[in-house]
Image (cartoon, rainbow, N blue to C red; front, side):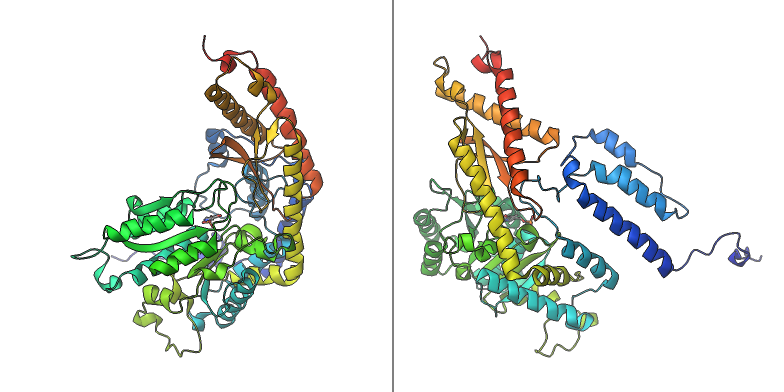
Length: 516
Ligand SMILES: *Cc1c(COP(=O)(O)O)cnc(C)c1O
């Protein structure tokens, strides 16, 4: 029996569905997208930073069957504009102050477009010569900016969490005197490894311990001092104790710009302890590292070069769109000793002159991240970036001053960086003789949590929080490239308005005095 004839598309009944857009169509839609972006930034102060949305409603607004036939791009773009963008948190909004601002500058936005057009995979030198060369250039620039040795090994990776993981993997292999790659970490005689970090370190250190099989029980949280900086004396004690008990230190992780309050661990003294015991020091400067270029902080920051490995996040502080993180290791060859593995199909006859970035991490296919970093640094210049960082520091200082002058606000844990922790502590709570100290703290914690919810729901600003020794604090990180003093003033007034209203609501209720 003859099989059914193949359908013949040539008579036009079924349009031929092959090939890409015509370039004229691309240019037309490209202009539409650029003008959408322009409109977005023109009106960004008029839109809410975030709108609380019912998850079910948001999902059903976007729910759709898999399209069988292609749709017009006009409709795709209209849905994006009407159904997607308004449901987003506007990370590029000048009043986005939650977590850490990762604002995208416009040269960075354009670079992402060109990067997608080139679609280069920079895994090997031979797959991406100029992209690999450019990655080396921007890594050297970022090293200069942060004071890290320029001849260190380095690469751009997807976020500081993964950078911490890769650095700790290299540190682990360095710490063990057998071939971990071959044998794995276990087996007879293998020591239990320990990672040391302050009680303020980023959760990605814990995640690295989970992923590396070290275990959370072996992440030693060294207490921090009253300014939330790791105590080097207690670090020393912990390492001595562990060595005596037969543990093997894998690494110490020091943080420059901690997540809750923006503290910086005392690097020099930690490096001394590491040197004494021969332990790898990894410096997680994801947030704080690039502030070294800001003249207002010159001298305030310690030398990052003491780290055997170090990470900084241009996606966080340098106006480069997500994602872009730089990982460095001044123990040359250590990353490659852990990660270099070349199957035949990737064998490109490495000549020693060139570098294959696939050798330095577990990632093979990797995007061309260097272009956006290069465009942003070149268009603003080191000095331009520095003055932008300075301006954020200034605005944060202004806000801290407002809070410390105000009777009802405190500014616990002041940071060198433009990360401001505020706590609303109204006098009337402190002055109420009926309330115990513990009750006062509860009320104030609850008030601050309500202020956060209200301000975020209002759409005027978006903040996050932290729980520190003083209790629950509002956390405002300033660093968006578009934020100006007026924006910060507006947020400050809004915070006061909401705080006073919340206080009035609470006074005299059972939430105040507690159940009778
Ligand atoms: C932001 C941050 C991280 C995590 O960075 P990602 O790029 O989001 O993975 C880790 N450590 C510190 C100190 C940070 O500030």
